Image 1 (cartoon, rainbow, N blue to C red):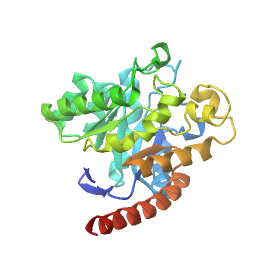
Image 2 (tube, rainbow, N blue to C red; image 1 turned 120 degrees about the vertical axis):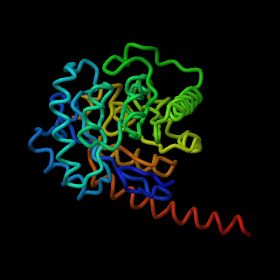
Image 3 (spheres, rainbow, N blue to C red; image 1 turned 30 degrees about the vertical axis):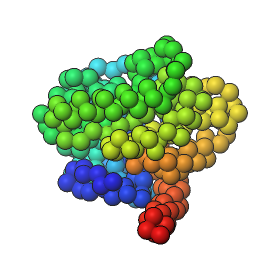
Image 4 (cartoon, one colour; image 1 turned 180 degrees about the vertical axis):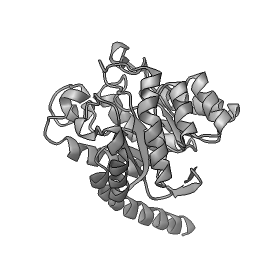
Length: 292
């Protein structure tokens, strides 16, 4: 798949690209990812040099119990960072679920709106009016409150796939230039359903949209490692979280993800290089075998 973004073409045919997380929030569960607004350009350069194709800028934490900030404060943190990074030649996405923030970030030069709510009509309108690609995610409930909804699914893969396919079609019909889809790991689901979504990524990719995943250092990885069911904030101190993140994202890349959003860019980028080499050979040999 070729992904057009910010006047550039990202070739995701065999290579899964890395979206590096740049937090200008104050209470992200991954505290070592938080930077001051003035330090953001330095951090973004580090992320790009480590292998990030896109820098994802966010100022509002999605964790349960996180402090809510006003749109004005979110804009004050995000917009100058976006503007400075675009001036340095970075591809930039804005991680927000607020239409006013999305519009301000796009005005500052952001190339992608990353809306975990599934994109409300006002945010979709921003994407349509400004010609900006938008990423939408499946989530039950609302940011910071997803633990309050039921985690029971008749079939999580069917629900997620049907929702994202339908929502992407609606947003495309409204006039957005490109819609990315994100299955929403961790949000309103338990460990087994997160694993089912991982295994269903080939089917999600067949919908024909760029597939973005965000599973970096999330609580379900700690549970997978045997540390028990933990919130992401409490999971960070547990051993193996970076290693689990690397493994999960390498598997996701093999299963069909086009972009992975991570904190630990260099470590994941190295792992994805191995996955890309294997995928290229697999695809080439598959084509030869089909001729035979």
